[in-house]
Image (cartoon, rainbow, N blue to C red):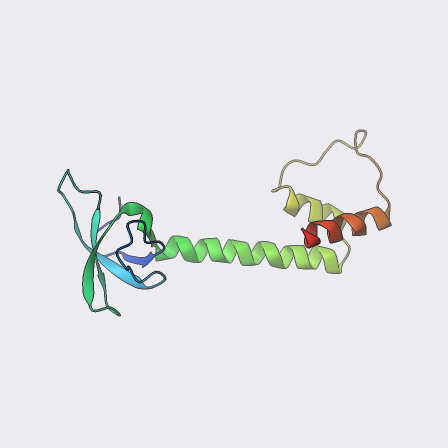
Length: 124
């Protein structure tokens, strides 16, 4: 549950209330009605009004910023791995930092096959 006064961003409009998706706002109250699907009352300064919203329609600004930073970091590492032809780094990033395969089970792949595989993934 989000705290009162926290800065949030509207990420969806589940119940089609014409919420300003992408705009920031502040949680000003909880909706304590047990028969209601809405959890929060949010003040959106740009719209100059309050909205009843569900928990799925809002996300903390901090969370969204950290997710965006992680995505940009991952893309930069992929670009670096491709520019330097660092196959090990590329595989580690694409596989989600899983443990490397044991050397005796690792199949040898030629440089052309690696480039073909990268181009195929980029095309998809």
